[in-house]
Length: 135
Length: 135
Length: 135
Length: 135
Image (cartoon, rainbow over all chains, first blue to last red; front, side, top):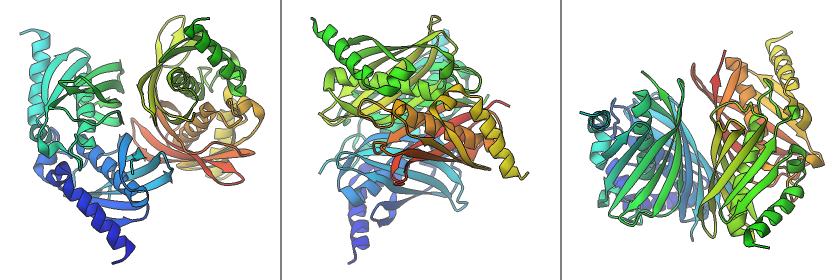
């Protein structure tokens, strides 16, 4: 098993162990050192009042993707700060969040992420997070 | 019916019409011009890997409470930006988010919120949002 | 000398040792555990193209006031993150930034601040920072 | 004169008309639709207590570069929100901020920026801003 397979396996286990991620339907689709992709298929329970993807799920995808990206380099982390820009309503049949680390320090990890609509590829949101290694 | 009752009724209707809010179990418990409180009873599906309240739900509560506070003064709004500080793990039997508007402009509404553990009252998170009136 | 006088003295020394703070004209006017106030008298060099207080100085006041508030409880800190909302143009003869700590952890200090116009008291900006103790 | 030269000329005029930019020594070095670069040569007055680039100037560079990038597509804008991550102390003989627009809406422009040390190229800070077209 390669290092990439190993990271993917580890993140899928973490993702499986988080009840909310399982309910929402988050799927880890890519993982390499410093970078992950997270997919969420659409279903009606994920909507806000107008039927678009709820801002809370947009934030959850950005935050979780950043946390998983940090994990690939720093091991277990906890979220400290997450800032999200809502750029367009999410109206797709699915969503793809990609995150990458910007700086990996001993005391803080900075990561950034984008959320895109599937299949249009339209940019729905971007964001920045700070995570604290807890290992 | 007083103005406050009216706001509470309107926000409960909006909250009921949002599939995710209903799934998560958000309850609008207070509403007055410029200020709302939102409650979330704990259950296991709301957890991250360690069983604490998932950061995505922390953000969703902060964001939704701010949006509802903006609604009390500006009518329908959409979220533009949300920044959340995760101050302590959420380990209570419930959560209370209180939000208030900071500035209500024609083009932007700024609001801030706190999320506290119930019944301990411990501060779990705070945050700031920007909302855009769409009326 | 009381503890408050001592904090004020220490912060004024730090403020004096920062070349930019001296150039800009920052004055520490209040300091107690967890809370400080910082004053900036207006002069033309502080302006942006329309002659209002430059956004960079708004951020510098928010960030510095938060850092000084963190210092009162945690000693020396470095800024990690600063987010500022620009709520109204700064058009006063002076400005007053007040900051207070929200949570003081061993690894991170969260603080928030407001910037008001003098003498009108109008709210010009608010913001949130994260600081890292370095002692 | 090409469109790029024209943008550069316009931004240099705006930069010249801002007293603080002139004092600090901001220089617009590149401008094309959706993207600008801003340079700041180091001098001692720009320092904080330890002699590194002051966080307020880091924010001012990020914010100004984002505002200028927004200007290239939307004309005159005002800053609404600026969030900055301080990733490393600024210890160079100069700094280069590059900014680009992420989304250009009628009511809001989202931009992001990086600040790098010169000549090392080390990443000092990154940030995100929201700007409001005022034309």
